[in-house]
Image 1 (cartoon, rainbow over the protein chains, first blue to last red):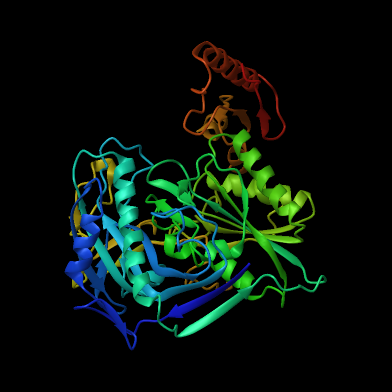
Image 2 (cartoon, rainbow over the protein chains, first blue to last red):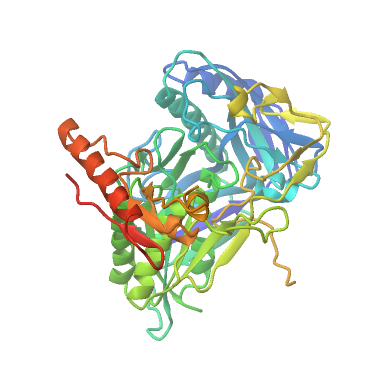
Length: 436
Length: 80
């Protein structure tokens, strides 16, 4: 496959009319877009929708974030950006795609907590644009368009999820049309059709997504992946958005749709392909399998895909905390057993100073080199902010019924789990290691 | 809890869906159960077979606490 990515960088974003992009300034016709998103929500699960803008450096906090989507459009080649979402499930990865790099579309809403299990419900995700918690999220550095939604009562979880996700996709398509005919600020080409030096090491990537049902879901070519066996994907398919997130549970771990189309390991391996290594492909699968047998099964099938690519080495990362570590560690163990060197990315526990107790959910002796994406148990104090976007209040305590608490005040969080992407295991983030 | 019970001198077995995690935190007697949302059963089985599966899990746990062990040991049952 051969894909050219055209990148647009915005200097500013403002409301105005008509919607346009001129000299790096994106103007958004607020009413037109609000009306469009409400009109196209076929089953009317969105009761109200208001667009808000939040800019880098602003003294602001964004709450109720469910998913974040990139504005993009397929300019040449088959399929649409994010294929299968309101479009046919056509295989993508060839041709030319345009993206806005530093503009994020954020779906924000309170989804119902009543009747949900203690683990799988839409948790409140926070992005602070300034202050000590800003570094937890790459979206403190983007211009953010907030889709602040209130949902009607009485619909099903599947309907809420569908309406929220589709609103983000429609928004992405709306801005995609703005940049379709324009000349990108920068382009990057990925040509996987060239001959590669056979002496270069062959490297694969396993990306294991979260899938435990509605609100904890991932979509591949427009359908949720509950029954998906490990499948080989081309890196360019991933860059064209074939993986879409419907994961609204642990905010620190979830991999937003925006990031799924820009997975750091995929991008880095693709950039070094043919120079430093031979990037032989990506294996996509789901974690959180329910039993030890199913974990062994997914690990064996994923490792088998890696071996079928004749890989010498593999990078493994997973979405979500908890038991998904086992699926990934068993995959690593199987690869190592077959002589394929494997390195995982993982978050850590470790208490406030990072050294207490058991550090990993699960590990295997074969995991000799481990990339840490940080501890989730570091207490963090967030300051009072001037402005809150995405909603009015925070819901942080389900065990007390999720009573709303003020969102703009100073508070100390014992763990970093509510910070959006705060311990993300995809490789995004601003953490640096310090020897001690 | 399993570790604390054993520290207090009471032999104990843990029925869990993920024996590897139990092993890594130092549980000594581990019985591989049904699934994460249902460690002591398996609702995908027909009712009569599930009852038998659950019986086997409990019997295996009893066997585990009456077996002398040197290091963390996983006990498995066959599906009913």
